[in-house]
Amino acid sequence: MEALRLFQSLNRAQRNTFIACFLGWTLDALDFFLLTFVFIPVAYEFGRTIPQVTFAITLTLMMRPLGAFIFGWLGDRFGRRIPLMIDIIFYSVVELLTAFAPNFAAFLLLRALFGIGMGGEWGLGASLAMESLPTKARGLFSGILQQGYAFGYLLAALVYWLIFPFFGWRGLFVTGALPALLVIYIRAHVPESPVWERGRAKQKPRLKISILLKQHGALLSYAALLMTAFNYMSHGTQDLYATFLEKQRGFNVDTKSMITVVYAIGAICGGTVIGFLSQRWGRRRCIILAALCGIFLIPAWIFAPVTAVLIAGGFLMQFMVQGAWG
Image (cartoon, rainbow, N blue to C red; front, side):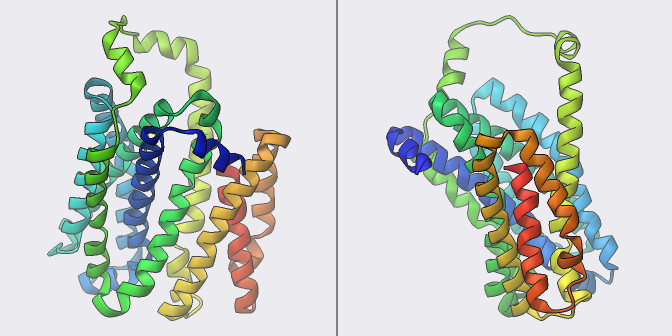
């Protein structure tokens, strides 16, 4: 209810900006997770092993920091809005080109380039959204914005379910080019960040990186370590789960899709519920509790003897993993 009340209190420009940034992050995640559903057919077509194909995910994640640096610099120099549109077009075009990759080397190159676009989207989108919202709404809406990642996973599962049986893995990546249409919405309805506009009007002295590291180096190291652990937990439980369901459990497309849809719903629910509880119990306490619960859920998540328990274990596992994020 609080989220609805705050959303209604926003003006039209603020609502449009948040919706655009949420969709940008959701569709970015959609494009990333599409590959996680088709490791096996991609490996078969290119005559590679599954571990060789999963290296494409590693390349994508490795290139994300480079994308964050490039588009972060562009965002500081030219504003958040225009670089965000360029970034969305960039990763959408790369996603489309992936559908026509003629060989495995080209496929890996394109997934590396996608990582640059993926890395740029979050920083630009989050900055534009948070800088456009009133201070009282930023805490809650930053958590909602992060849930776009879980919504992207849900969309990827649904797209796989509907598209793959008819058009194969290449058809999925053609569908993944649709986020480019979001640029039309941003161009028409989203204004530039007011914080960036005010900053451009004021000539601020440049801060030296050495001074920043001296003042905030310990906090930066802690944050980097924490986010490394969070990403290990998130990608470790998501990226190969669809392959596990097909390869180890022998599920067909329909069953695999249904389980991953439930899995994604668990992530959305966890991020929302535990994010709400953290307002009362504190962030650290909720993170620790969710992570510990996730450990105890591993047997049901992987080794469940029956499908019903596996589905429940998957739902609860993502509830805890994304709950820690929330």
